[in-house]
Structures are given as structure tokens and as C-alpha cells.
Length: 286
Image 1 (cartoon, helix red, strand yellow):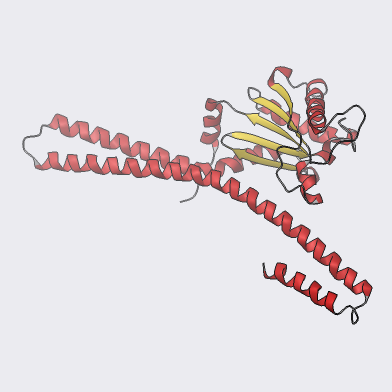
Image 2 (cartoon, rainbow, N blue to C red; image 1 turned 120 degrees about the vertical axis):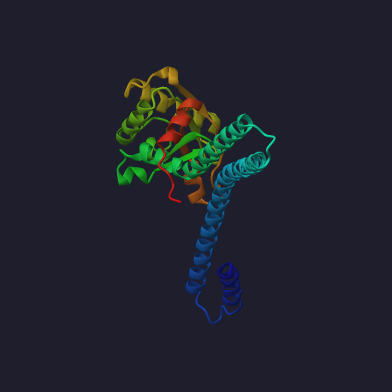
């Protein structure tokens, strides 16, 4: 923040002393300020996205912690009842045995909640590793994988998939799409949505009316490539476009526009499949 305040001040001083500073130097300072301001906007956008993701994960942890607290309180009450039975001659062995069973059942459930909480952090790592295991380092730079509420999002940059200014899949995209197709086939019973997204710059092509058209056409091109070239079952595929209305970054900067021009492949497991993935997640070290 200090740097952000100091630089405009320096420019003001430079402007006041133009007689002592050359025009070239002044332009250089002005350019540096514009670059730093653009970087600051991009960092703010990243910060907001990170905050949103953190809020979702924090909500999951808080929910588990609340369940743990409730179960521990219940276990404490059961233990107190058992202690009372043990010290009271009027209580029979049957009641004591029933309380012991309830305490053991409660303790097992508490352990399950603890395990679920520990695995929540590692589940994202497991799915990310599974989904990116076959991508090269260069390919991985244009691929972002996230897991949110059991749904897997694979985001691919437009320059990785399409010809410049077009919705047609480029020849260079073949290697990456073949590996994405393998990932989709690995999860053969999952539903797959291909979702196109654009920046807010209006499209200027004769046969494309607006960014809604462009995003939908790009998603359709990927769906058809997965079906015809890589033999993914079309019954599992859905193509959709969201135009410029689902940004992940600030369109005021070029870097933000690049991030917003993307295609997402959204893999949605059913509940039983998601629980199977949770069971595969490694235990988190205590």
C-alpha cells in the first residue's frame, strides 16, 4: 500500500519540476506508474478470488467442527449417565450395557467426522493429481484445476484451444484435448459440461452476433472434438456459453481479460462417486 501511495506522489513532484526533469524521464515515470497500477488491480482480483475460495473451504471446516462439538457433548452426557449407573445399585447390567454401546457408537461417529475433516484438505490434492497427471509442464501452465463442493473444474485458456479470433479448435490443441479426453474417460460415469467464457470486448465478426454466440460456439467446438476425435460418449456431454458474464478477473486489465477468455470443463460426480473419492484421500497427519 505504501508503494501505491508513494508512486503517485513521485509523479506529482516530477510534474512540478518538469523544468529539471526531461520529457523522456517524465514519460518513463508515467509508464512505470501505469504498469504498477495495472499489476495492483490484478493482485486485488487474485486476492478476491482467493478470499471466495477460502470462505467455501472455511465453511466446510466450520460445519465439521460444529458436528464434532455436538457429538463430543453427547458422548460426555452418555459417559455421565454410565458413571451414574455404575455408582447406583438400582440400575441393572442391561442399562449399563446399552449405555456402553451408545458411547462406543458415538465415539465411532466422532472418529468418522475427524477423518472427514482431515480428508477435506487432501481431497483437492488427490483430484488435482488425478486430473493433471498426464499433462506436460508447458500444458499445465494453461490449465487450472479446482474442486468446489465436489465438482471438478478444469479451466483451459483460449490461446491453448482456439485459432486466434475464432471458435474453431486449433491443431495445437489436439495434444491437450486428447489428455483431457482420457481424464473424462477415466471417470466414465460422470456428467461433463463444457462451458465457454469471454472477456467484455464486443466480438466483431459477421456471422457471430455477440459474446454469447462466441462462448457457445467455442464450447460446442470442444464438445464435438471430444465426441468425434476422442470418442467421448456424447450422452455425457453438454455445451454451454456464459459470454462475458462469469468473469474470474477484472476486465479493466489485459491480464484480467486473458484469464476471462477461457473454456471450463466441469466434471460432476454423483454422491456415491464423490464419497468413493473421499475414501481414497490420504489421511492428514495429526
